[in-house]
Length: 99
Image 1 (cartoon, rainbow, N blue to C red):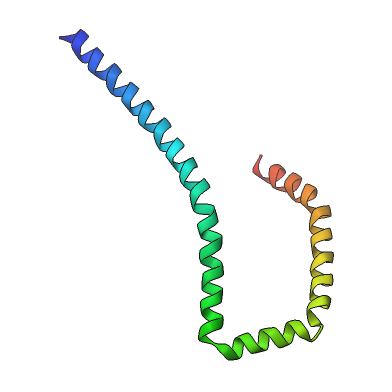
Image 2 (image 1 turned 30 degrees about the vertical axis):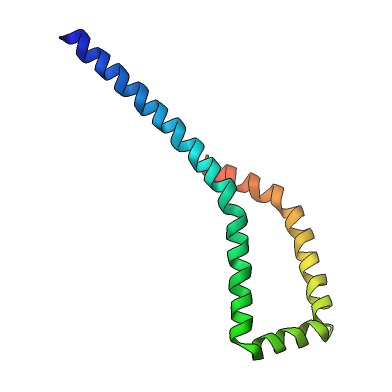
């Protein structure tokens, strides 16, 4: 009787491990499929907002055409450069705080 229970427990453990591997594989596949849809749904949401509120669309287009966008892009470029410089320090700081 004990050998039979050990066999059942062994099979159960094997099935649990197999289910865990399959669950991880399925999650990985889902993330690969879902990522493009996530971006698409975001863009569709923006498009719907612009269709719903034409005043907002007109304001956005006039803002882009007025030349302010070039100033905004330049400043965001500087922030990006700063972040590239600060990122190694930030990673070091977080590792130090965790340990």
